[in-house]
Image: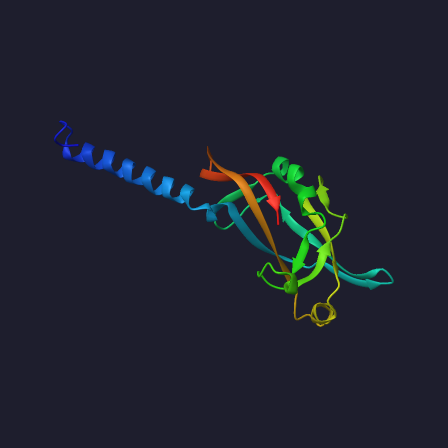
Length: 166
């Protein structure tokens, strides 16, 4: 850049911007940025004649610790994608690790601006661990179509768009 007639300071700024854009492109190539996981508490666990059910808030309108903002409009659009999904005992997505399924009682609550879920736990060991208080949270995973950068009063934020719960 200095050979092009730019001052040393100007050349450093230009090179810094080029390096920043290069890192962003590399991040975009690595699809792992699209996969998001967050841990939420089980708010209620009930066994009745129909089975063992857990309930909770999968996610509410918020900005997470890693700076991703989930807005109500996107949560509303995505809530139904959490219906009838397998509940895994850990993050291994295999048949042997399925312990239940979310039900159709999943939806967006406009008052709390959140996605609420219900899950039917079929695995008796998991039911006991939940009842005994050994398991108190679930991990909710999602894939997003895009992370859109926006500037606001707090600085630069990233908004999750096209959320698909997994």
